[in-house]
Amino acid sequence: MTQDQSYETVNRKVSTQDLSWILEQHRRNQLDLSPPYQRRSVWTPRDRRSFMDTIFKNYPSPPIFLHKTIDLSTGEAMYHVVDGKQRISTVLQFLDNKVYLPQDFGDSRFDGRRWRDLDEGEEEDDPRGRLWNYRMTVEEIDDVSPTFVREVFERLNKNSRKLTAQELRHARFDGWLITFLEDEVLLPVWKRFKIHTTAKEKRMADVQNLAELAMVTARGKVSGFDQEELDGFFAELDDAEDEEALFDAERFTTEFFAVRDWLDALDNETSVVSTHAQPFLHFYTLWSALTALVNTHGEHGVAAAGDIVGFGEQYRRFMLAVREHDTDPLEAPPNVDHDDAGFEGLVARYAAASVGATTEEPQRVARLDALRQALQLD
Image 1 (cartoon, helix red, strand yellow):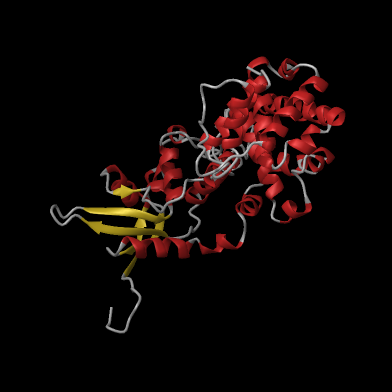
Image 2: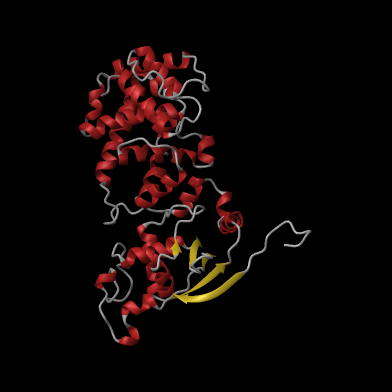
């Protein structure tokens, strides 16, 4: 860097390497797949099969970017994966027999095969040799500052900044979950619940809200809002019938519809959902409370909530008290008065968890616990 230069330049070494070289670095524990700037892998089973198809057909693939550092005391190199984590991880999963080739590969030696199923062939065309000898472009970045490496990573991924996270999922996934949610959100009930609105629809926030509800149903618990966790959820259920998914789509839809339809009936009778379960943080809590009943008692578990009109009146009374409660977000943590299970104490706990970082897991859990106790849903 010169005296007048306010930026860093980088020395890049471009080479081609057999896949066996990359895997050898992994065996030597010299390949870091998870440097701090890496995002979680969000590849679907279909993506992984597609990449293995690419390898075994010897089609070209994008470069792998590695940041090389040297331990000055031992001289050992460490290669940090800047870009290419999903591709390398997919190969490792294939070698561990967790991924299989597409059923329609087009060659009976490879159709639907896992690594353990590949038969030995002639030396010049051994099926296993196609993987070991697959050539990839590798770009090595010399040892530079962590800040600069992050800048390289962000530049490699900068196109994703133009879209919201859910718009990216819409572009990325086309399987079971995204189709289910994008069809479901168009039903009139979600418009009445204020999940589907014109403003939300423009950036697909309505589908994202619905995805959070679906995750509660699928996993049987609340969690903090996390875009990467949602990415993983969409990837996991992109192909719900895939043997790797371990997902019961029929059970999921039955339980999801049971809660949706009960809330629909509740709102038709009392209007409390459209008037008091708003904004989304309150709807999420109510949905989670009813989902807990379904998870415990099955699709008819919502009946444990009792008479619809009576439930509606209880919920209305509780939410009115919450809105009237004076909470200072700087002074009232979400676990305030946990020993006070009386009505006012539960109102205080719910209200305290409804300000500040309302989508964090502790706040969501605190609201859910308070609501379940107040409505006697345990």
